[in-house]
Length: 284
Image (cartoon, rainbow, N blue to C red; front, side):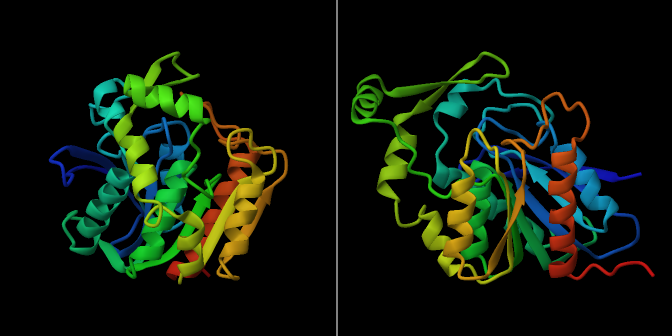
């Protein structure tokens, strides 16, 4: 039975970062993988709890957390705080990741973790955040991304940008819930004003740890070519795990309805990657 510990950290802006730490059996200390959710995602979305259980069963502690302004108020909630969502930026998410990593490395989570065996993973936009973290934090020893973006500058045409500035908000539809999710001008200013820090291909070129880029060939949200771009930029430090027929979430939905062949394949490749790079022994 997977042991789950709930935790709450405080962001640099004084807002809660809720997380779930799933621990393997045994005394440890265990290698740990910190997992970043994607845009319109959260730590309890779809495959995330299931994936944490798969990691723990394979000897890897898994820490899934909510970015502080992802719109989720309650520790186990869904997106409902639209004002927080509006005020979110990529730089805030990158800072939130540092807060989580610092807590792991300082031993503040009251858990038998081995900070010298630390991995990072992210899905979609969260894959980009994890990539930045892996490139910038020398304590990170391995990286895996799922359906990750290769660039954050995905802004619309000039007319849309002008309207965004004029109205102060860009609205996106959450297809799952029908919600209209607002993105404020702070997000736009952050992307345009921090191009160097948020340059994902540049970060990939600086990557000094082994990476795994998992991407579905039928990804309808982030084209498969973006995964290929990341691998090409890595100079051999990352390898591509292409999954034929897989879409952006590898067939997973929310609420979670069980694994799919694509999701199982993604998880198996990722677990193998982290077990080998973080030094998990295979039972004899």
